[in-house]
Image 1: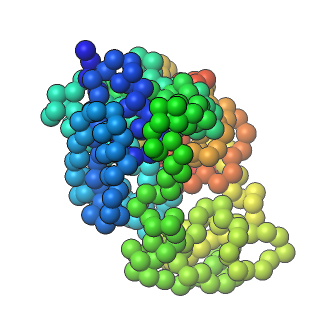
Image 2: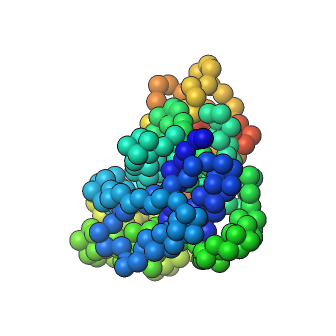
Image 3: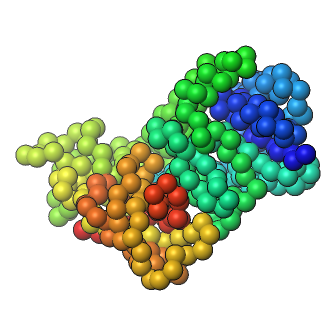
Length: 341
C-alpha cells in the first residue's frame, strides 16, 4: 500500500485532499510546516482536529528560518529593489514542497500531497479543471522534475464540489473561509508591513518620464506598477505608475499607453521536462496570476528568454513570473526582467 504525507493547513482544501487520498487506499499522514514564530495561538488546531477525525498521524515541522530567508526577506528585499515579487511562488518552490519532501523522506512516506487546484499527469503539470481556482501558475518548480512524487488530488474538482464533499464527510472546516493573500502580513496591509520592514515612510518625488516633478510620495515601495489611484497628482490625462526607482527614491508616472509592452525579457527559465526543441517556439503566457494567458513567441538562450506577445500587454512587472502553457500544460516559466515597447 502506497503512503502519502499531506500538507495540512487546516483549511477545507488540504483537509479534503487528505480525506480523498485515504478513501483511495493510501496510508495517509498529515504534516504542518510551522513557518512563523509569531503565528496566532491555535493555528494548528483545525489541522489536528481533522487528522484526529481521520485517525491519521499528524506531524509538525519548524521551518521558520527557511521561510524568513527565502520568502519574507525575499519579498521585502524585492520591493526595496523596485520589483513586484510573488511570495506564493517563492514559498512553493523554495520552502513548502522541499520541506514536505524532506519530511516525507525522513518519515518513510512515498508521496507528498497538497490541496492545490492543479493536475499532474505523469511529469506534466496541468491546469486545474476549475478555471476560477486553477493554481498551476504558482507551482512551477525551481528545477525540471521538481514535482516528482507530488499528488494534487483536487485538480479535477471545482471548489464548490470540494466544499460539498467536505460537508458530506462532516469535516468541521467545510465552510471555513479562504486564507488571506499573503499569509505573513496581518490583515493584508502590505503598505504598512513594508513601511515597518523598510524603515518607515521614505518621502520622495513623483516625476514624469522626462523627469519633471509632479508631486511627492510617501515611499516608492508603497506603489505597484500600473497603479493609478492614490497618486495625488493632477494632470490633463490619467497617470499610472510606470516604474519605481529605489536608488533615487523616485516614482515615475506616465499615460497608460506607456505601460503597454509588446514583449518582455526573462531570466532563470525552468522547463518542466526539458527545454523545448529549437531556439524559438509558440505557446501562451501568463504574466501574472490574475491575467489571462495570451499567445506569444518565445526565443530562448540558456536560462534566458525573449518573449514577443501576440498583442501588447498592460503592466509587465519586473519580479513577477511569466509561465508558459501549451493548452492546459505548463511548459515552463521565467522571472520577468523587463518589458519591451
